[in-house]
Length: 175
Image 1: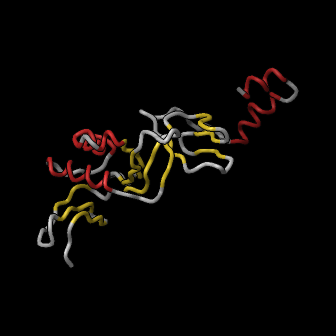
Image 2 (image 1 turned 90 degrees about the vertical axis):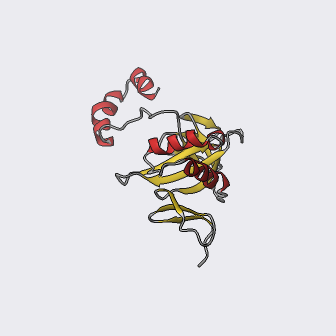
Image 3 (image 1 turned 45 degrees about the vertical axis):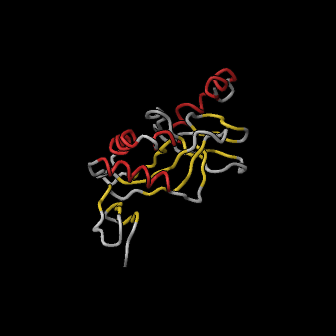
């Protein structure tokens, strides 16, 4: 079967110049599942998804301005754990693949946690919505500091029971 353009397989992303070309491997498998933008419908980009060598799944947003700088794009992908082949043509083709991807899925991206719109509260791992909002993905400039320690039962026993009847403590724990 004649091939031309990009081909994504379980072995990676390949580019074929023409039907007689053996193709070049650009990187390990890389999907572009969604277009992204901020809540003001600016800062457009693409959501990309891949697995690193440790089989850890990554999703990251590539901003449109980064897509226009192939070296910066390549560095961002490699730092995230994508296995990227070397060469200028690779960087150019990866930029082309991501920028020209036209997925149907459209998501908002949030760069901060908390209330982002009425009825929409964003956390690093999920968004809590009243159902009137599109999908939201959180991505900030670095790792978030939200962690979970203990269980709900432990919280009820060690914290919650001490709050019963103490309005000041209830207020302090609630803020």
